[in-house]
Image 1 (cartoon, helix red, strand yellow):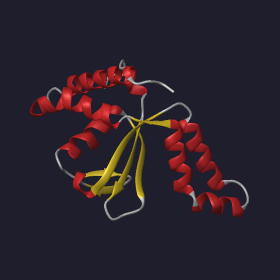
Image 2: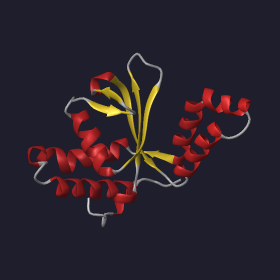
Image 3: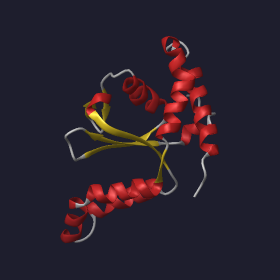
Image 4: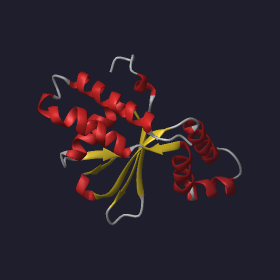
Length: 158
């Protein structure tokens, strides 16, 4: 995308749970275009895509959350990883053992679940023109992000 779009700075995280697996798959820092092309399109088409390096299909998942990374997310995530490297051994072991619990707490505190808004934007702006997606990719992604932004304005803020 061209950089003039207000959503260009937004980053998204994925939180997915596979059937028959208690460990969540988490991926962070996805820009809008990659979210659409690498996740939403293949998910909707029941094609394989990757989350956190794991190949999955929509049918493999019990759930998939699309999260908008909010203010303070990067700082808290960096602090979590810093605690894994600095300090006494006992403290580092605690952070390593409970890493996913700490990480999920950051996701809950510093991200907003926007799954329905993203899917609505995709279904409204991209899916009806999917056969024209490659030649019109930038226009369709721009239209979808505008629908997403408008939908986000309607949500109550905490």
